[in-house]
Length: 395
Image 1 (cartoon, rainbow, N blue to C red):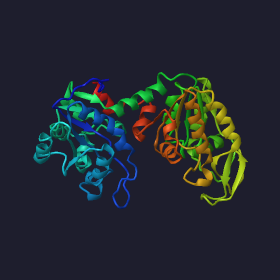
Image 2: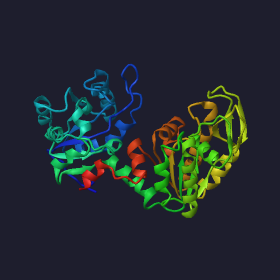
Image 3: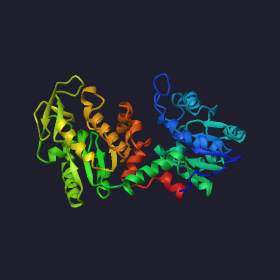
Image 4: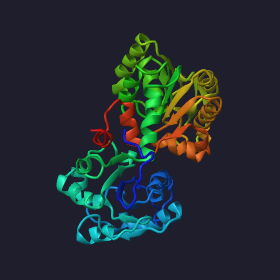
């Protein structure tokens, strides 16, 4: 892994693939600048070591040029977060864009237009990558959120920078955090996997069974497991086609000496809304007309006893419908328990869109060892897949 330690970039133009795929509101203002903050250490490092920065990123999934997804909309936020002046150019390739990058002086920053205005970016076209590569003599990939895509700017471009390609500070931290869970984590290792669907988490669970000691299952996918175990689930969300798969996971875990922990009780609602009437049921005996929407008090006591004996904890996916304040307690409590165990010295990694959103929403972000910025990339790493953006930097 080529890191940025002790690198001089004196008079070098450094092309940095950042992940500025940030959410915008209807006024086209940035509503969460986490990803811009995450890129700051790498940008600062280059500028403080004599270089200039050409920043490239995608935003959304435009079909051709669309003004509402122009990176021009985020320039003011980038300036605010970086606390430096930032130039912008309305294209990412071509003569004018190259003139702009060529005229950069050390200490200056240029942000280029949305890469995905060109279909060649997503297709991984080599000619497009070659044009992008003209903007710098050094390439840094710091876009972990896009590292699982074999796109022109994340993977193909590496061919043009033989020795002059580096892991950005964020990318390095993400890779090391995942390694700490999957390879070098201090035992016992616990994975807390939540979310609505078993189908979207099966590959993660299966690949993690070789690396963990305990698995807590939460959220909507609980009810597929409970149905598989011949329980009554009322109107709870369930993927009936995956009950056999759920039983397979339980059997595989037994063979590998992994303890699976399902909730004991749940908080149910008589409809899917925040205003629903609440009732606590044994998880295997939910009455008709009721659906499980959160983990119950006895379940949380059980989960706490598991969390308090684990030294490495991965959390991916909420324990209930935390968007409804009346059914958010399970997710909040589990977050607080992980934070408490982190304080005692455990390593905690939070990854995947909803759990990251939850820790931010409930003010727990700074109490975790590491909160990942890359949803899909993080999940593919946990599935044991090789990410093309990372492979390209190594090979």
